[in-house]
Image 1 (tube, rainbow, N blue to C red):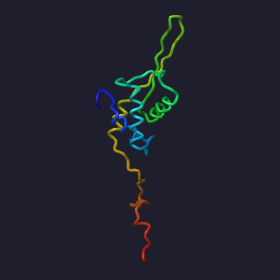
Image 2 (cartoon, rainbow, N blue to C red):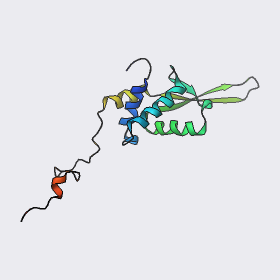
Image 3 (cartoon, helix red, strand yellow):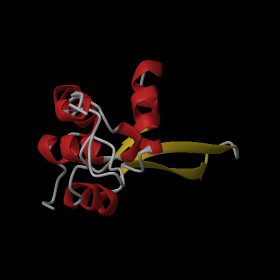
Length: 126
């Protein structure tokens, strides 16, 4: 994986994520582009820049293990503690998801056929 996460890489990771199976590639691309617009060339952004709707998308990608959070605590000049929350890419997980092949949407069954096969719906001439 390159030094930065690209739109194509993030799109592939979203499509291959078990939490997002069945997502249309164009929807995954739009989501990847939206997320990357926050990050730019960085791997970490501050949570304060997000609107509630945006944060929902970030939580969805956190559930898919594509993003994670961290926090930093600092002491203000008046002695109060201040917490700063960040969102980070999980590069190793994104790379794993990119390497994994997409699983076929059809259920694998032990009978060797799919309900989508027209031949199984034909009546035999007995």
